[in-house]
Length: 293
Image (cartoon, rainbow, N blue to C red; front, side, top):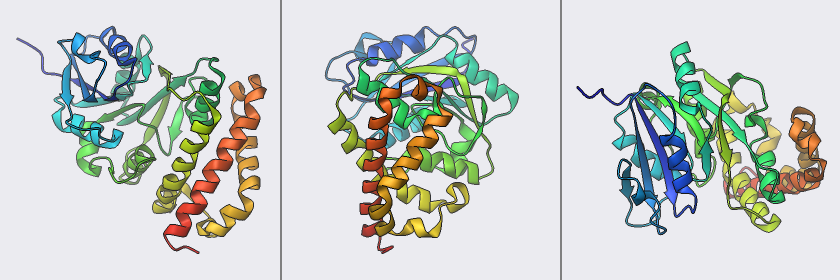
């Protein structure tokens, strides 16, 4: 008799040129737990169709990552849902490390991020965006987690609902903050590693990306003051406008002292600062739109 699916691995995809590598890294996982792989989105390269064992849900038009994940959740059969992005490669033991954490009693687990050192701006991006989730960081409870490497029990999603598709950035932070507020502890498990290979190789692209991230993330941070403990003064767009250089400097300094990879790759520091400055500028614009000024 076929065992029921225990794990559903969900991969949002929008024409990733390496989604086949993502799929292969998942299919190669050594585990006794029965799992399915669901890919949601569009694939102009025809890479997903090479794998008949994959459940490929084609969308008629491009959809955001949050909507793609929601579609995958609704199609999933597993009790444990694991999310990996289509620009990521799962390490050996990825599923087993997440499964072990589930068996310890955790309901929401985020894994570690590895980054190549080249291209340089790919390194800059990963150190800037995922410094707290690098695989070199310590295992510990946390307040929020990104969806590029995330595992969630179905019961948690049934409690808090699906991802917020209105948010174009920060949907994962919003989602996992809701989980925390619903009483579920979040674990960062660095041993459940993925290699992150996004196609963002120039500083202009990165600054635009961080500007948009700041625009949406500041809304999320003020949506959950119990989690992020944002001072009231930081609801003022004028504060982010005037003090953006200082806020970016303090944030970069904090990252420097907490992240050995940044200290090792000191040439990234000016660029991390520029990205954090763009984030602050996006946050300032966002706060003005909601009328906090």
